[in-house]
Length: 247
Image 1: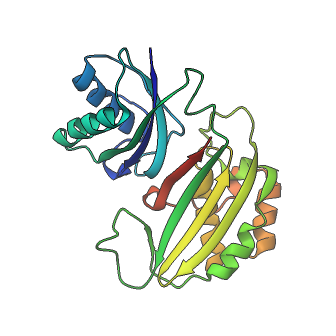
Image 2: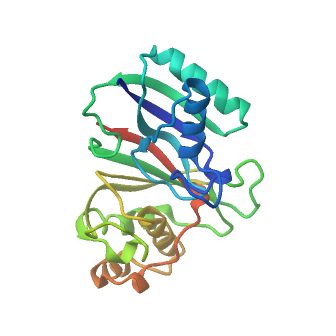
């Protein structure tokens, strides 16, 4: 039974998240339905990360075991055709056959995320549901300085959802950079794995630094508190993108 790896792009604004759920359409469910329509097989695909409702992806990765051999480009094109027929905002960017021990989730070495903030007085038209609109000016340099307090191996209890199912709050954050290009502020994060709502919690906290309300020392104190109540407001899902997985 061959195993196929898929790299996936999607607009998360119309889905309840990556994971299949009973309360609405999911990205996982859309791809599994496309596979069923193509092959007649009922499969359960595994993704590299479970993005929440409203979160987007430019480089999500999933794997699926299929009964027959497929040319990767044929599989990609056929699945995209069925996804298009269903009006799903999901695209298979690449498909490839991989060894049977490859696992989209557990084989991952690093995951890369992007959080986009547009800081301007006028509301968003083209970028609505694609970024977090902040109507006041933000100091991205102050946000970057505050972000460096979070880089490294820490107990991130403060920055994870109360519903997070991870066994340990300890993670190693390899990168948390904040840059600006005109009105667009980008927060880029890299780690082997992340906790539930960790990046959105970072983004909401770093906005406080950009507002001048928190200093880098305040962010460090919040981290060291190991208390969810010490976190800043959780940023909305609109600005979060799952960018890439390294294997």
